[in-house]
Every structure is written in C-alpha cells, then in structure tokens.
Image: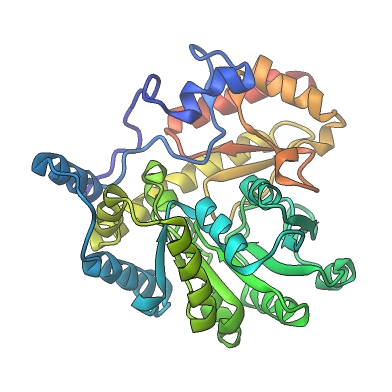
Length: 392
C-alpha cells in the first residue's frame, strides 16, 4: 500500500494551533512562514483511521462510548506485537491525552509542595503541569556528551532533598531524541528505588524510533519496580491524531491502580468516543504498515535537515534516535538566544520551539518539527543557510 507523505494539505483556517497561531505566537507571517514548532505532523493518519471516523459520521449518532473490548484488545495486540510488552487489560485507564494523564498522576500520587523530578531539558508541558498543581519542579540536568544526552545518577543523587515523591521520565526523550538503553532504564529504576519515587514513564514517542534503534518499555527493562511504576502511552503522536485527546495510563500495581481510579472517578473522566474509535482502528496491521512507511520517510527528512545544518558553522543537530523533533544547538555560533532566534524567525521566517521552555540545558537550542512534507524541510534548510550565510 502506498502512503503519500508528500501530499500538499493546506492547514490554514482549520483551527490548527501549529499553523493558525504561528503569526500570533512568533510573529512569523502566515503567508510566508514555515510552522515547525508544535509536535503534530502535516500528514493524514492511515486510511483505517479515516474510515473509522467516516463510519461514525455515516451512522450519525454520537452517544456515550460503551464496550471497550475491541479498544483494549487493540492496545494489548499493539504493545505485544510492536514492543514485546504484555499488558493486563484491567491495568488500562483512558485519559484525555497524556498531559491530562500527567496531571492525574500528580493528583493521585503526590501532594502539594512535593518535589517532582524532571531530566532537563525535557518536554515543556511537564514543568507547566507540575507548577500549576502546586508541586515543585526538581531539575536533574542531562549531560550533553558531544551531542548525545546521558544520565549522571551520582550528580542527581546529590540533588535529592527527601521532599521528592515522583520522577517523570520521557522515553524516548523529547527533545533530544534519545532512545534510552537497558542500562540507562535500569539506572532510572534503581534511582527511583533509592529515593522512594513513583516513576511515571511517558512513552508517547515509542513507535517513532529510527532503524537501528530499539525502544524498551520500562516494565520490560525493570520488571521489579511494578509497585512504583506508571506507564503512559498513546496513539496520538504515532498516528497524528493528537486532537482526539486520547491517551492511556497503564498501571500494573493494584495499590497504585486504586489511587488512580479514585482520581478518575472524582473528576468524572471518561473516554472520548471519537478518540477511542480512532485508536482501535490505528492499532492494527494496517496502522503498523503506515508507521513503518512513516519512519522511512522521516529518516530522509532527518538526513536532509542534519546535513543542511552541518553545513552552517556553529550549528549542530543532535543525532535523532527517535521522534521527528530535531534539536538544534546554536552554542557554537557564539550568539545569544535573542540573536539566533531573530535570525530564524525574522530572516528565515520559521516558527520553532524555543529551547529555554524545556528547562535547564535548553537555552542554546531550538526544536524543529520534521514531521512535514519533504519540500518544507528542503525549504527550511535553504532559508536557514541564507539566514546564517555570514557564518559560511
């Protein structure tokens, strides 16, 4: 089956935050700008997902969703087939996306004033949600070792005060694109045991892994920490259906599960029928074939972008092992963040995520979304080279 990732789809005027908010957020003109910030892709999902939505529309009744057997069967099949992870169907909770899942975990497993550990720089919504919940962000900085993020557990041990109760792991890592190794995941598990932390492992990017890399689900990496482990997964990033706001929090331990169930009940949260139908359709052999084709396409986008940035003295794109989010280091230019951001937004007319939003260690970076048509990536490279032409 062919998949046309080069199809031109105009997203302006569709309430797309990525395209319709670009000018208001970044001052990048809508008629000339390239939106390479928000982490959604400019591709339609696989045809099986489109058919599921069309079938709902054709039926024309949008009532409460019931009988989640097929939905959970699809999740079990996907995790076992794609990740070698056996999931208990009773462990699955459905949330309104994984930022909502994060908020629910904070409610269920921490109390106001508790410290929550983040390995920075990391996905910006974690810190935002932690602070809004009245908890304290505790940054454990990743080490940038020649363009590769690594964990320094000894340094992190020294940062703990005893007030920390939770560790949120981004696996694979956003924005650095690291696929954590078995040894690194084991290290995280042992760190959480040493400091008595609930470990929330956000694995939303686990399907978006490049050839030659292997994502290991945390329950497989450290089966002995089930009593403190909360898993978060979703179809939304993989299949570009983030607007469905449907994610899964998967909790094997009955004690943690009961606490989480109580928060779900107290807040009156139940699944979105559109999202659940879409997820059921996506987690299928047809969906799997689409993901394989997507990753081959993104591999070439990554190659073009990295080569183009490498040609600009002082710029370095962190080698991506997973995700479609390039993490571009400007520290070699000697410019301030204000200077290089102005060149990217005003001269190149590209909207990107500012690295400072991702916490300590992100200040000299910008995040570029490569989940778009090849022609857009090629154009972005040309604009960047022109905007930094004086360095070449």
